[in-house]
Length: 110
Image (cartoon, rainbow, N blue to C red; front, side):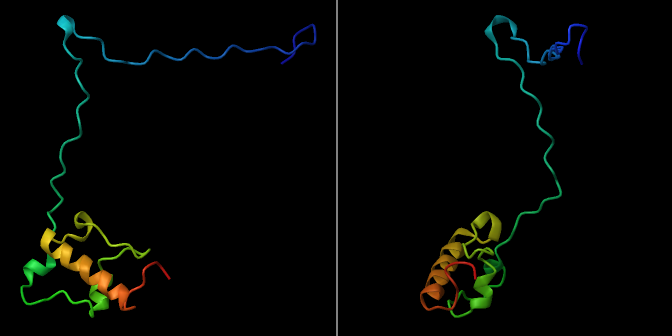
């Protein structure tokens, strides 16, 4: 740590290795991009539960059913998470807003 003259030694910072940046291609072409991982085949498409069961109606008074379409903080879940089709997602959103207005569902988390 100290040399013969009692002054602290300063170590040089290690030199970083060269990054492996893609080399520019000849003739002004773009360099190749890295390959993406292959598509996962295990995921299934979500099916709208209201389209499957034609007899089930979306009602603002069914607070327990509507609670499935809200997050733990009380926000309305988007279609990609809930799995509802566009038509039923609009009806679910309207029913949740009506249930909130009637004080059947909370606006925010408890």
